[in-house]
Length: 119
Ligand code: FES
Image 1 (cartoon, protein in one colour):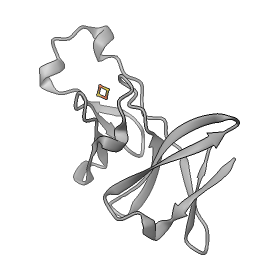
Image 2 (cartoon, helix red, strand yellow):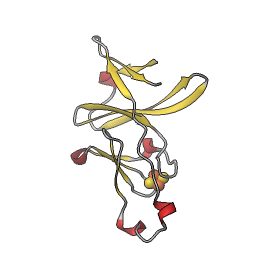
Image 3 (tube, protein in one colour):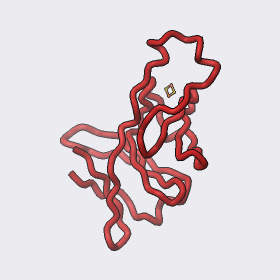
Image 4 (cartoon, helix red, strand yellow):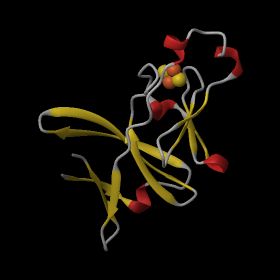
């Protein structure tokens, strides 16, 4: 299902915006952003322990986001966890366990409006 969110010019390069989308009665927090001029969309909740990724930082040179809570790094296009910082390596496996980012497709219409595709 396509949900209109904003215009492409509303999102500056290497930045992101947070949207609340009512999907079948469930409110989803979704980030739409642009990194190196490429659009991405992902769920706002960090797959590690649920911190808000909208408060986190983008790393343009690697196409990653680094979660502000424990600094785990995720690739914005594959969704994969790429790095757990050194200081957490001694934590147990259960603590370090993280899924990947939940990614969504962003569709740009001819007039520059963006929609996010959620199933
Ligand atoms: S909650 Fe995001 S890295 Fe832990």
